[in-house]
Length: 386
Ligand SMILES: [Zn+2]
Image (cartoon, rainbow, N blue to C red):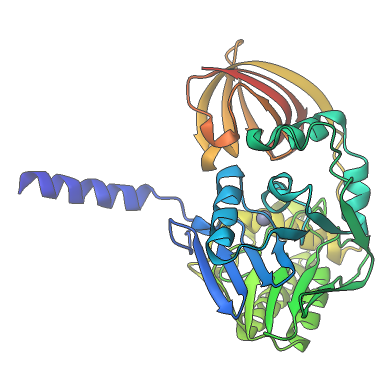
């Protein structure tokens, strides 16, 4: 009796201490059939999603999973429903949690990219190419001399892939700041992968450097997606959604812009707007931590300013891992001099010493080359010793 009340008590304490951000997908990934031969891979706790289209001429995978274990899991699910090989990988947004699993499939699979993404990949530095080759040890031989651009096809506005009698339409809704985010539409089944613009009950990850585009660009994309009248929509993150959820997102963005506009009309500075901005009408949505950056992004947009550009300096650090968050995505390091440092580990980080970032543990000895940035420092190369 005593023990259970202690447990209950600690559960209550845990709930009180739990961060405001609420996960809205389960703690296990799901492979859901949405239509004949069309599946959604729904990432755990709002990890990145993927879409799988099976045809008699091979499989098309749209986005590739949050990290290596997730990508391997996607492949396992594909192999459980078909013996067809993965022939195409389509990338809806150029971020590690969407592109990072590509080398498990390609080569031989062909990768389809928007031309803006291809431009970025073509300019990758050698550490990025190296980590691509090393990302899946089981693929070391196939990727030995491979460059990520070697097996790609690119497009600018629209492309239809026809495979095994199925149409797969790739849609780019252009604006000056869309970094190459696309949607993938299956007209025969009415299923849509909404790409970056599709969110359900999650505050969007929109940033003042426009690395995820702008709210104006998102509105333009959402209008185009709604016009398709999809029966089911796979968002980049979060549970499978529907047409009505796309409209909710439009209302959300219009309200967010109106709120920032109202604060600007009162003469508030960007710092004050960052602090006061909220979207409390959407209580319970994931990632309230995005409020200040959403506000700062809209502030720039409404002033007609381009992306915020940070001067980037490369630095090195040696020390110990003091804190690990989100399966190694964020680390706090205590340097040998005793100074604390926040680092972001992306799928482009060249990691030596452990197979992937999810294996990083508190107490490991650590050295890294990183780019100093305003929010989180970006790690380029790192080496850990247990
Ligand atoms: Zn993502």
